[in-house]
Structure formats: C-alpha cells, structure tokens
Length: 72
Image 1 (cartoon, helix red, strand yellow):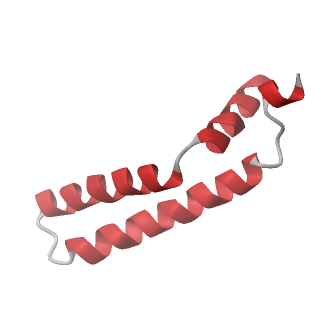
Image 2: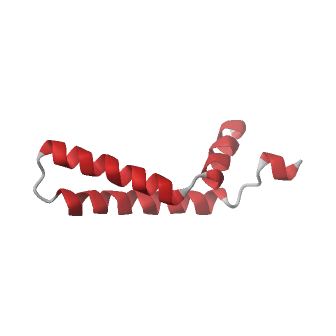
C-alpha cells in the first residue's frame, strides 16, 4: 500500500497542471456539445475549474512526500 501511495504522489509531483486542465476542458466541451447542452461553454469551464482544484490540492499533498529518486 505504501509503495502505491508513493508512486501516486510521485505522479502528482511530475504532472503538468496546464496540460491536464486543457485536456479536461476539451473533453468536457466535446461531451457537452455532443449532449446538446445549451450552456456547454460555462459548464465545461466549471468542470475544468473543479478538477483544477482537485489537481492542485493533490499536488499540495504530494509535495509533502519525498520522491524516491530524491531520497536515495
């Protein structure tokens, strides 16, 4: 369990937040366009903002875990 958590935290430390947010926003925009949502732009921006908060909190928690490579 500890190894899996450490690898997850290492992934959060390495991830590019802007690239993930752009991908999440594009995926939501396409989803809401395909569903025919009238407010697709606002809804996709809100969804990306929510996931952005989740990702940033994940990065904050992950910054407290030492990397395997740094601790050697």
